Length: 124
Image 1 (tube, one colour):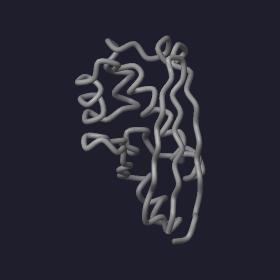
Image 2 (spheres, helix red, strand yellow; image 1 turned 45 degrees about the vertical axis):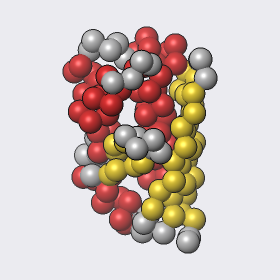
Image 3 (cartoon, rainbow, N blue to C red; image 1 turned 90 degrees about the vertical axis):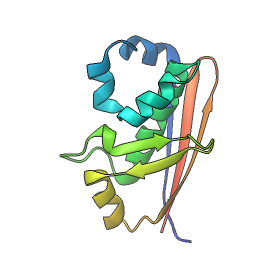
């Protein structure tokens, strides 16, 4: 296993809550996939879950070298239906990962009352 990159991000939940209102589906839809929004809707702590997903997306972007032209945040999808969060890429994000020869991702997300953090490790 070849280490290709590590990304880390921290999101302050009160600021995230102020930026992303749960009833603004247009804004949320620019950042989160329908699957991610559906998973969050089934949670008792929607904002915390979405803040963690946002931190994970930002951590992935740090590995990929930032948000490239033509890449949408929804191309980085964080799923956790089986408990362990996983990263699913599509579109330009998937092409960039392929260019970088990333074959697997490890992801950990954690929350406190005021913050959500995520770390990703990309390997080839």
